[in-house]
Length: 394
Image (cartoon, rainbow, N blue to C red):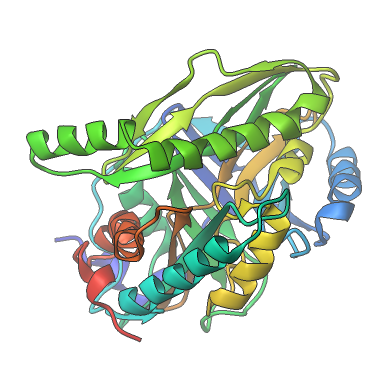
């Protein structure tokens, strides 16, 4: 057994020094060249000016990458690299990267179900009208405490064993969690927006069901999701929002394949591939991501009202969870992924996040179970059983 990842000194160096950003997806790995420099942080209203200035000063071939927070008025974390190395995807099976872990929930599954019930009561008491709450996405958090530092590099390697996700590792620049440099690591199945020349693509996911090892049970879960009126209603809200947001920027926009099913190793999802042609080929991908984010897939509808309620109901600030991670080059091309199925790593601590979309007809216990299913990939990668999310207490 290779024990090198358990060496505290090695793990501490890994936390601080292994790439300021790395993305791994089905088409390969993107990694920062050299030592990236920090882009001045700020909120969304100043992002376009800061990004344009950074890329102009970086020279031909420079690439900007990093993380956007969940809150529209939150502060981003962006890095400028001289370029990116593109490598074929090469994944090796790694050992679990959190030795002797313990787990704490914020909130526990039962308390989360109570919060879902409260949100449903608010929806039921809402008068009809354009501002009524139609959907809210509620999240909960798990904190892992390990006996030694957790390796973000090892965690990303384990998550990359699922070929249906894009994994990411972004170094953060604050010390609000843990006792060491913070790193955001995750495995997103959802593309917020991708731009290549004048073409764009978004692939929202909303509506989920757990995968099963038994093929018959797995097929039944897939069929149940496909036929669920509640999940299709939830999904349609997200697609409509993205189409409405992107339409002013596009000369052509549509959903050529309609809504279908996609999956990761642990979850089935309803998904719709949206494609379009920009009016202005130079529109940067990060500007489109800023305009779209947060979508109803991670926030709710209306977004402003849902975000305010999330602030009141959730006990842990989301920070970069349910934000966006990605990159943008000097031509504006790039890809931004929704920052879900992720963890914030600092020293020997990891904070994991998972959420579920709540609409009229949601069942609190089922939504709590959905968060447990969504924690599964990260828990396994950290050496914990998938069912630990439902058993964890405050």
